[in-house]
Length: 198
Image 1 (cartoon, rainbow, N blue to C red):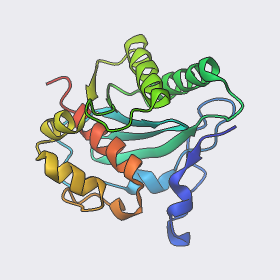
Image 2 (cartoon, one colour):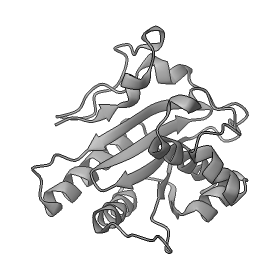
Image 3 (cartoon, helix red, strand yellow):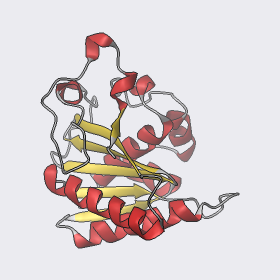
Image 4 (cartoon, rainbow, N blue to C red):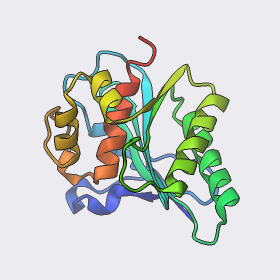
C-alpha cells in the first residue's frame, strides 16, 4: 500500500521530479520540486516547518509548509484489509515518520465540528490517534482546530474559511484551484500552526 499524492491533478508541464523524499516502506515519492516552487504569498512571517492534517474515514490528507513554501501535499490511504487497530497504528506510524522526515516544528489537525449532523466514528478515532502522535513526537507545539479556531489562528472570518475551502483563493496561494477540499483544509490548518508557539 502507498500514499497517494495529488500529482495526478497537475498538468504535464508541472509534472513531479524525482527529488521527493521516500519516508518508509510502502511509500511513494512525495511531490518533489513542484511543491518546492509553490508559495503562499505574504505568509513567510514565521520561518518554521508546519503540518496541517485533515482526516476522513479511509484516508488522512496532510500538507507540509516551510515558511512560504508548500513542501508536500499527500494522502495517506488506509489499506482496506486493515481492521481498526491496524489502521490506527498505520496512520500513527506514518504521521510520526512524516514529522521526522520534514523536521516539523508545529502542527494542527482539523477535527470534526461538535455540531456535525452525522459523526464518523472512524474519522474521530483517526483524529485521536493523530493527536497522540503529535504528543509522542518532538513537536514544539500543536493545536486541535475546528473551523472557528483555525480561522482565528490565520486571521480570517469563519465564513471566509468556508469560502476558501469551496475554492475562493483569498490568500493568493499558488495552485489553490488544483487542491481537493481536504487538502485546502489541511493547508489552512498548517498555516494556523505557525501561531502555535506565539
